[in-house]
Each structure stands twice: as C-alpha cells, then as structure tokens.
Length: 575
Ligand SMILES: [Zn+2]
Image 1 (tube, helix red, strand yellow):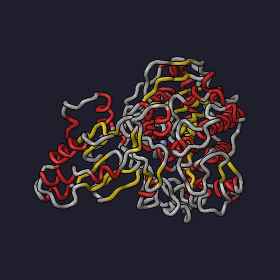
Image 2 (cartoon, helix red, strand yellow; image 1 turned 60 degrees about the horizontal axis):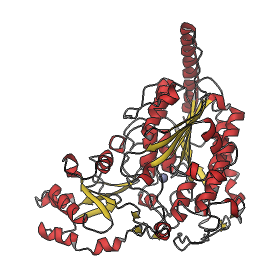
Image 3 (cartoon, helix red, strand yellow; image 1 turned 180 degrees about the vertical axis):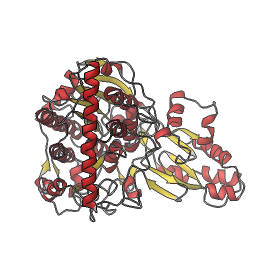
Image 4 (tube, helix red, strand yellow; image 1 turned 90 degrees about the vertical axis):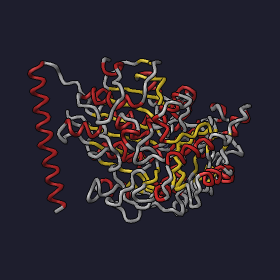
C-alpha cells in the first residue's frame, strides 16, 4: 500500500511538474518575457546570529562565505523583530510566515496548554511519531529545557496557525516544487518546511538525522545510507580547536572565564574535547560546537544531490537552520573566543555550501536569503568587567521568596495554589480555581503584575488583560508584548526583565546567557539576499525579518503566506 501511495505521489509530482512547465511555456510565449525565476531558493537561518556579528567579526572571514554575502548581496543592516519573546521557534516561524506570533501562534518554545492542563513543547504532536525508534529525547542527557518539556516524542507543524512561504510555493506550483528543511534542532527544521515540505533534524539520542511520520512512512534510501555511514564518528576522540592563530582573534587573550557554563565533560577553554562516540554527552557536545553545523551541511549537501534540487525550471526550496551559534552563545557568550571561532568556522561552512550550490545549480540560478531567528545577549560577567554593573543573572530564589504572591493571595482570600506555571516569559494563573471561587482572574493578574513591577531586575510585568488599555509605559515594549499575545496560548502576565538581566537557569544547568527578551540585542538580526543575478547593496533603512516571506512570495509571483504582514523588500524585487 505504501509503495502504491508513493508511486501515486511520484506520478502526481510528475504530472504537476509537466502542468507547471506548460503554464510557464504558455506565459513565456504569450508575453515574450523569458522566465527568470531561480531554480532553487535557499533560506538559511543562523540560530542566534546577532545583527552585529558579520561586521564585528569580519577579521576572521575567509573567501566565499560571509564575504560573498557582504560583498555581493543586498545586506539589510537594520532589521529587528517586533515580538517580545525572541526564542527559536518564534523567530523561525516568523521568518517562515512573515507574521508575528500573535498571528502564527508560536508564542514560545513552550507554553501552558489549558485544555491539556500541562506545559507543551511547540511542535510536539502525539499523532506523528518519529520514524526511528531510538531517537526520542533522552531526558537524562538533554540540556535543552524546552525539549524536556515535551511529553510526547512525535513532531509536526500542526501548531503553526499560518501558511509558510514554502506552503505558498507548493500551492503556486501545484505541488511541483520540491520543499525540504534541515536543522540540528527539530523546531529549526519543522518550522520552515511548513505543512507541505519535508523536515529532517538531528537526534542527540541516536546521532542520526530523523523525521516523523507526518512527512514520510519510511526513510528515503539515501537518508538510511547517510545515517548508516555514521558521519558523527569522525569527531570521536577529537577536539574543537582554534582554527586561526590566537593573535588573529579579538578574544584571543580572553580564553578562560569563570562566567562560562560548566558543562560536564566540556572544558571551559580551548581545546574542547568531544569525547568518544560511546560517551553519553558525545552527540550533545557536537551540537554545542561548530561540528553541529558541519554535520548539518554534510546532510544538506547529500539532500540536494539525492533529491536533485534545482535541476529543472520548477523552483525548489531548501531551508537550512544552523544551530551551533545559539548553543555556543548560551555556553560561552556572544563576546568570547568560542563565539568568535565558531563564527569563523560557520563562515567556512557557508563558503563550502555556496561553492557546492554553485557547482550543482549555479549561484546565478539560486536565490539565497540568510537571517537569524533572534540575536543574543552579553554575559553579565563580561559586561560587569567593562563597568556595566547592572547586568546580572536574575535570581529566581528572590522571586520565590518575595512575599508578593502571598500578599496577593491574602488580598483575594485565596488559599490554593495561585500560579499554575511560570515558563518565560509568561505567568499562568490557576484560572480554574479562580473561576470556581468566583474571583475575577483579570483583577488578580493585574494586582500581581503591579507587585512584580517592584521586584529588582523586572522592568515590566504586564497582565494580558491590560494589553487592551492604553496606560502602559513604553510603546515599543507594549507592541512587542501585544505582537506576542495569542488568546489561547499566552499566559496571564508577561514578565520583561531589565536589559542585560535574565534567568540563567536552564533546568538546573546554569548557563552563561539566555536570550528571549524584547531588547535590541535579542531582536537585532542580519537580513541578506544574494545570488540569482542580484546586484549588491548595503541598505540602512529599518526593516523587519517579517518582510522576508512576502518578499520571497512576490519574487516567485505567488500570493503571500496567510498571516504575512511584512512589506516586500523593493531592493530585492526591483533589482
Ligand atoms: Zn534560537
């Protein structure tokens, strides 16, 4: 039956392709305009690539990677997200849909689902199991607390409430466009593939690229072969070493700091051991170093070859999300030798990708767009050393011990548990209890928010109910919180910490930095379009990353994604 279905799917694909080409031929014949559409669109997301990295770390660049992007591309130097919760799934889906989380629904990596009465992980879906039996999240070794929040191992894009650019491309081409997405992180891949593409991501549990039965009934042969070849084993017993001589780095002399994350088995300064392939943290350490990006590149190259992307006149789509910059930032901070060397290696990874694409498809036939899902904060210890004394890790104990929650409970004569869940940035109140007692939940939320505003390190605590009123302080922050508000998923109070203050606790692991704020260091990302014959430009005007998806749509002539509100970028379209 599966065989029959897949034969049917292939046949459908072929028919759709012929139909599409006929349409293009008719269009070309009637208008006399040659079809100049690219054969391949590559959307690269570098997880946590803050907007200043490409210029700040320019001195470590080689040829063909970021140099190609900066010298040949249309480089938008002032792009900022306008939603509050600058986390991975939120940014990725905003890139994919051109919408804000209030519309696309992905308001955080984790939210409290009131129907299920529990925290849920953004893309978990019990209906779509992983195809590999041994690829489930291993909670004993997982260091990502959002992954640990998932109660089921199935994954799908079902929670995404708007169409993606990739979906629109599939609709436009009547299914003829091939659409794929790859990342170390499941949420980095599932987000960009939309409902119509195929997503692959790296399982730290089995060291393989995996997918769920949302996408496939069984793995394509080439994926089985790639995994069977065990490419991760080339890192066994090896180290992450500096790529360049120490004096070539801005942070060459600053290579050992007490504020660096203490991760079991991972040295706090160069060289960093990966351990051997049997070690329980081996695959984790590959992801917290440039090796994760190199493996992603390797898999993506094989995909382009095996799926024959960009080999005919129907444009195909490949999304690649590189995750290492994010993990390295969490562990060592944005201003560290590790981040600088990781950036140098990311540059070589991109150069290798671009030269591969040039060989297989031609860069002139490929439209590439690179951006990031969010930026990065600085480590408070680093800022303290520079004299910025207010930067700090927020002490969760101080919040627990404040008498404010007790005071609010007393005021409303509540004895039961009032706070149902706190998962950044939202506090969820025990609404069922409040309803049962006939207490106005909005009033309680407002009272608690006002009290929280007095806690040191908290800039704003804003109750969701008050979002519709106008007496809120800062307009940009208010808009960011509104843009993040989804009535079924957001909590009762949104907590914004002061700039350079954040909770560093990663489910027990004390990490150097954690993004997720509405402040500029977390919302600032690069946006660069290159290839497809575009002539280069550096653009200083303000844009948003939500502009990318509608720009891609306009570029291929499709309608924009359903929730897209971004503005198509004229420098790309009129180029
Ligand atoms: Zn991220």
